[in-house]
Image (cartoon, rainbow, N blue to C red; front, side, top):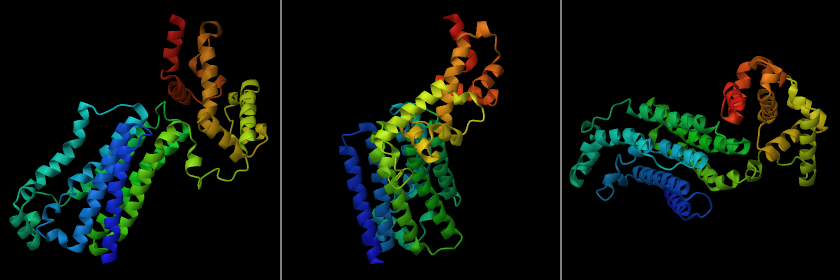
Length: 368
């Protein structure tokens, strides 16, 4: 057990070093780096708390004030992840309404304040007696509310920004890994609570779960470090060489040549007008494998296959809408003529690439 404690103290120290590195990091946005510095610092503090608990030293007067100090931290991880991603994607800083994020934290602090406000000797006594929760109004279901909040921020963060115009294919891939790392941490935290609450795991073995949590936090920190490179145009595959496209055999020169060929095919042959167009169809026109065709679209155009095709369809639709008084086509006719299967998907794609719906675009075009 002493080895495990020493190991986690090392992790805590590394977390403190990592938070300092984020603060000193010159590349990328200083504010975003500061948010991740706070995140890793808080997590390092929680690891230190766990190490003191495992060793039993948290009951000593020297460390007695660490008891329950990590409870409020659980409600800060999610907001920090959200604010970080919002900063990266929209470049927005802190706002007054962000204070709402602190409400759960303040509620926990208020709930546990009778214990926090105890003197050192009294606090040591109730900890030794195991009667801490006799003095606070922390409900038995409180931890489940915290877990729900952790998962809420994971989904809320991703679905708030994945459709942003600044989030292309590679940025979306990065965000999935980043938020996914936070989701992994939340899942393992929830799993630990579930296993211990229902007596499926002895709490003294919770360091097994904590090791996995450290892994996910490490991943999150890693993606925080590489974020500037991704948003400046570096392919996510080059940052993560163990995933797709590691050994495709497609040289850079051939890749650029195929990019030009793809543009020529799209502009001359207009395969996007076929509403049943699939990646395999485009691969045959390119005389390339499906994987290589996908690679070219992802890396050179920063789009998924469907977004790449729909972008051409929207461009064609804009031309038809500009001349709508002459051709007299309805929106449904235009949707089918440019390759969409239905009016709903046409409106959705059109708004994604132009930020207005087709009707508004036509009105603006006729007014100009």
